[in-house]
Amino acid sequence: MKSITILGIESSCDDTSAAVLRDRRVLSNVIANQSVHEQYGGVVPELASRSHQSNIVPVADQAIKQAGISLHEIDAIAYTLGPGLAGALMVGSSFAKGLSLGLNIPLIEAHHMKAHVLAHFILDNKQGEPDFPFLCLTVSGGHTQLLVVSSTADFKVIGQTRDDAAGEAFDKSAKIIGLPYPGGPLIDKNAQNGDPNKFKFSKPSLPDLDFSFSGIKTSVLYFVRDQMKENPAFIEENKNDLSASIQKTIVDSLMVKVKKAIDQTGIQRVAVAGGVSANSALRGAILDLRNYGCEVFIPKFEYCTDNAAMIAVHGHYLYLDKKFGDLSSSPKARYAI
Ligand code: KG4
Ligand code: ZN
Image 1: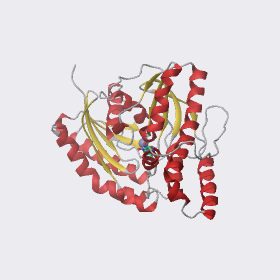
Image 2: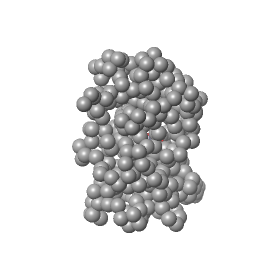
Image 3: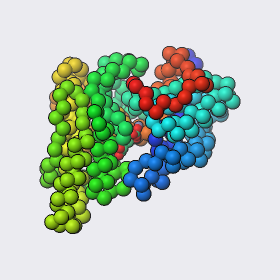
Image 4: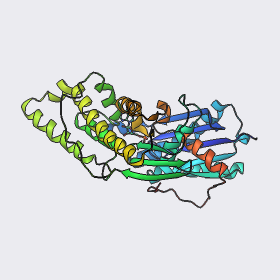
């Protein structure tokens, strides 16, 4: 059978990425992070669009060179149609459309959250890929969802956040304790040397499989504010214990729902996806599900946070299903799974 070579393009938030996959194997996966947002404590959409604009051509060029292929070996271009920041998506979509027209090859519209899940099917994950159906906890800066995945094209949402995403809970709590954006990875790093049981923050208690994270951030804010009145050095003196306690609160809240979903659906294959799945405590908690009789799947670090390899693998399956895109499609800031 002829091999399939897909160029993936990702520009939904603050990472510009291009990747080349041949038959789901990664030939290249280039990511340009945008440090410009650090000083603002969050992603500034207009600055993200401008950075994508200056990064997209060099990043794609590097991905093709690293892959060691010529442009004419690409069978199709998959790009993120949504969800994400409209202006940021527009840059990747315009680039992909222009290149597909120039090369006269099909365009494929990828869904960012489905792509996070399908990162498990990149042929680079040592543990192998999950059989269907499996449960997937998808946790990123903008989304928190529990899904039943029944095929590479069949995703059913069984739970989701009613307010903040898990990544937002990490980033906003991190900001309260003085860490720069994105604070999630820094909380993880500080937590390695902290006591997760030192401080207690209020945990959400929603029925069903839905999540809520806005209360955690408020609980951290009020607690820290009260402590600082008595000791202005409180944050500095307790940064590691605060980080570990915040991390434990968020991970415990996620895991309660994962266990509930296993019990309710009877599905014992559990995967995790999205930027927050890079978190070491969450990875540990998912691995512990093996003691619960589950088979677990955790992507390699580089395929957890935003990357174009996951867009290309999603593109691979859409290519097989002959689901091609259209030059007239507009980016979708909101895009149901
Ligand atoms: O999937 P992603 O790269 O981008 C979105 O689609 O949103 O996820 C980014 C999120 C950010 O909130 C970031 O703080 C969080 O993932 N994150 C982490 C870690 N690495 C990334 N959160 C906690 N611990 C980590 N190690
Ligand atoms: Zn993402």
